[in-house]
Length: 496
Image (tube, rainbow, N blue to C red; front, top):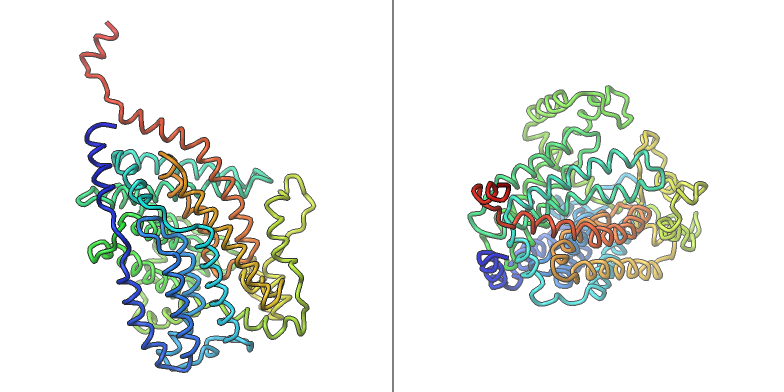
């Protein structure tokens, strides 16, 4: 390293701090009065207590907050109906179309999230002193252009993986994970951009705009990904939360919510137009036509429709109705499965289809249909409808042993995070960047165990491969970029 780089490392190491209780206090000031307003008081207060517990256990200042994000996102899905209902004066059953034990479903979900956060903390252990400073110091030791070049290379690599994956038979899932490596590069670019004041933003803005525009226009827009990874990177950029550091974080959160509301209001009309009325998840229009139609639909949105879109988004976020219906039917109409669903999900990554071509295909929608008894014609359009991994744990193990399964999952997630953040030297920054990518498959409450457990196992293999092979290439690339180039006169003399 040059002397300037050593000064950068020392500055980053000296700028550490501790986390602030401000966000937690602010959240409590808002949520407690809302909890006391309406008909969902007891469950709302339990939800508030669960949030305090999860934040206290999983907040690790200066580290990528993927563990807290996973807990927080699912907490919102489990609890938003309680607080939104209290504000409008509705019991939580108001948001459901099918009868069931919905309050009990929320209770079991909140308890499961508490167990998940406790087990994650046990496995991840306390925060290692100085680790966040070392991560930022390594990233800041290299110029911003280097991390932008890494992002561009990772994006090109991801496109190759996505192109090859459908033709690769048994290697589809590993290639799908490797294609997500670009988000690790985006994380590194975000931390490099926002960890220092007065840093150039043009490279990061270019990457963000490119990812956002690329995600818009598909049948299922995945625009939330770039916002979530931005939030993770922004949080990791500041060890100590202050008003100034919270501004970009708050803006990213507001932008995510606003975009989600707008998309909720236009997606039905857009999908019908994009698929030419076929509703088969196939986009049959060109890029320019996509953006033209989206712009037209947004232009037609008024205040009334925006309010309706807000209700649609809130209803979409809630995910307890299937679980409530299941509690009425299992074990009365359907017996506990004895671990069949989670067992199949656990064995799946160890029985690749390349070696086990006759492995049965597990259809989430058929399982949902079986255990809820809800038959919806729209489910036949290829949409995967899941009960959620917590509801599946109940079906497999019952209301007591389900928590053991959730705890086992949390221990694995915490252990994976601890391993990635326990890397040494230059691997530490790469491990920190890989942690959000490796654990992001677990952030949705509606994800089935088959979409949580196998990706987490494959993430371990993929991260090991990247840390073992690509980290050396990255270090070599960075060293080459930092090596001073000889002057023109010296190059001429060398060839003379």
